[in-house]
Image (cartoon, rainbow, N blue to C red; front, side, top):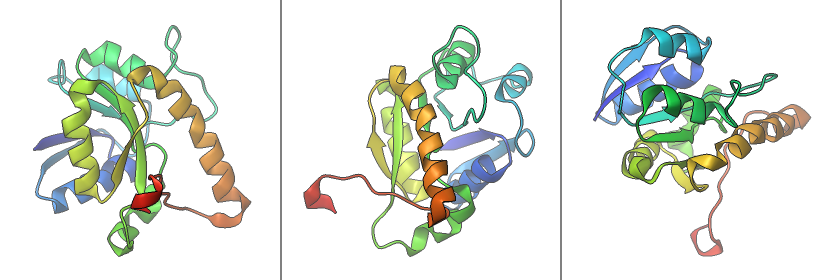
Length: 168
């Protein structure tokens, strides 16, 4: 699969390395961190493509008129869109291969994105956990606050697993 990440930071760069290791052709665009809206203004060729929004809006609201940043991204790309890879800690991606079972990663989004998104999860070392349609992206984006609280309460960066009892 040909993949482009917008951002070379912890998440975009980290996922890029994992996907390259799985045999994908990855192009890293942009810079370490930054405002996704600025990046979308300067990137061409993604119109109609499947897009995964992995951003976190820490201390800010979604762009005006949108209930999530993922819905804003979809409005700019007009392609199948998913919200994913935002509820994990990129600093420990190097430990994914050491886990007994793949940790989970929440994603919500358009059904047309499912095949690619779930394959990319598995190729990165995660088990995809579907959280419904893109309309749920706002809830997923707000969930990062709880993940940060758990981290800061003493656990540190962590993986999680959400599965039915027979798959734990």
